[in-house]
Image (cartoon, rainbow, N blue to C red):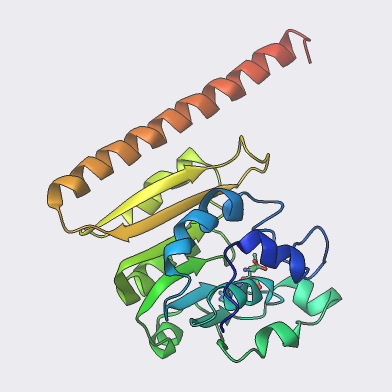
Length: 241
Ligand SMILES: C[S@@+](CC[C@H](N)C(=O)[O-])C[C@H]1O[C@@H](n2cnc3c(N)ncnc32)[C@H](O)[C@@H]1O
């Protein structure tokens, strides 16, 4: 009988994959809210499928180990150029996480056009957890969204600058897709604790509505952030802080 786990957080705990407990670990379940607030729910319907998941940026391999244990019938692909300072200086990669039977790694610059041609889709889930610059996040959409299956999820982790990043990311989403912005900064205080998620949508009206809604969300975040900054300055000048 297959050992199917229902909860990602159990795997994180049992296998010691959380960053707070293991310096080679992943931040997805402890420092960030992604496992609690997004992955547990959204990945559940996929967990017994023979899915193909691809993640850009695996560092020591903890997140690949997490997906490998959860999607026991899935195939997990990790891309990394091994540029991470933690890999080079302190800790070597955990080969036990990468040498699993359902894990495959491809080494190179994931954001180069030539490299992306070596990455054979299609994928049901694509995660961009690379260097988190707006440029790399837009490039990930440009190079890999076309490799996603209908019904799949394209997830960009750690959205910098909150509202500001929504607009360039939204502009990179082609027609035929919708996008959602998840802001978890009030759940766990971390400046980039946000996800940008893209899904296929063939109804043109839904796409137009979605663009309007997400743009409105962006404007609201900008206004809120702008007001908070202004308030902080006013209080500082008034000597309150
Ligand atoms: C935030 S870490 C990934 C963490 C991992 N997903 C986890 O949850 O444990 C970002 C990774 O992106 C990799 N990276 C940075 N630039 C890259 C590039 N151009 N192509 C591929 N990987 C890159 C780094 O080497 C690093 O391992």
